[in-house]
Image (tube, rainbow over all chains, first blue to last red; front, side, top):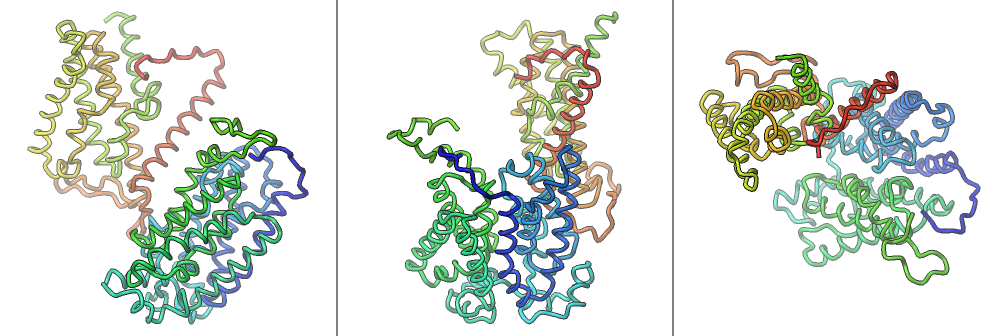
Length: 338
Length: 230
């Protein structure tokens, strides 16, 4: 996509993917600390499913299995799916989501590098559309003992009181629907300092992992900055107009999947925009739609839907934002051949 | 019916059912295809209605084709189709009232279904009534089997049942619960995205089948593209 000079970079898919996995570790650690070991079970299950589906699809497509399996891209997809789902889902939901992401989201479009949609977000959307009730059951913060968690993951009878702790975004939506105003809702137990008890720490850990990716030049600054900037801008304007109906920008930046989305989801090099200006438009578009879904939509968090919607726009964004060839002053009218 | 005619009729049938299948090859009439294929009963009943309309409309237009002025043929075709669909709509309302409530707007919408008009314009307006009625029926049955397959897949994956709503047609009949009572149901299969995904998989399966068939029989002549598919 970029114009010349085409510098050879000493990097590989494998190195990028392994770095992303490492950068995810702080947030995973925080989530395990907050919600218990269910997340680790989920990661193991998603990884196994992803590798099995990847191997099966590669051999059906008569591609070299070992090399593509070793690049780690399936693992990144699996981990992203595992961290964005509520922990302690029954095992078959993880299997359905992950195999949908790898088989339909990735390989039916041509495998790594060809998929127009972010596979992890596809899995999330399939699951939240299909099982909205189970998908909103986040475990309570105090956690439960590992044996009970294992029992739930294996599909055992669920004691709903112990499992259900509404996410801050859920609690906010429910409260606003009940005509409470934002400050009243924020008094409830689900909310900590800014964005829900514990959730700020998860968000900060995602931010830290994201800064590591930035420092190692796995991602560029464009997408996170445009994402967080646009999110702060739209939520800030709404908050200034009517603080009793719209949550503060700080809440929106730290709640739900904002940080995860800004640093790890929207920065997917395959399904995201590739030109510098395109990345700004792409990320700002995601933030705007995600905020609209949070504020006016039927689902509590809209990052996944927003990412998929902007994924469809990527070919258009890339064509329209193609940088001019070095030495040319005017862009060709059609944006240039690719 | 001599041999030549018989091959011609066989050809029409094969085109309608497979080679030029409305749903899998021409991709026409996707609106009802996607909207009512959420259960097997809905899918089959609407496509049976479409088969009936297509056969009758094609036959009627072919019988009247020398009388219809060329310049205003499309409005006349639509009037004929609309008259037939209205009869069908009233019949559904009278005898299958519950099903009528479920299918709702999609029965009247058969008038605007582009497959019906496409076959009338491309085939019936140029052929004998019998051949035209056969073509309409074959094209309709081509839609029917795809819709039945899609409907049963969506119903099975989405709810774990087959033939749910059969009691609207045969009072007292029971739906099959194939996947057990505690099957949670993959709701997306019943929602519109599921229709698109499963139809895409069916088209891919057909393409793979055709590719394999042509690869093993390289001497097989390619069927000439039917002008009607345009």
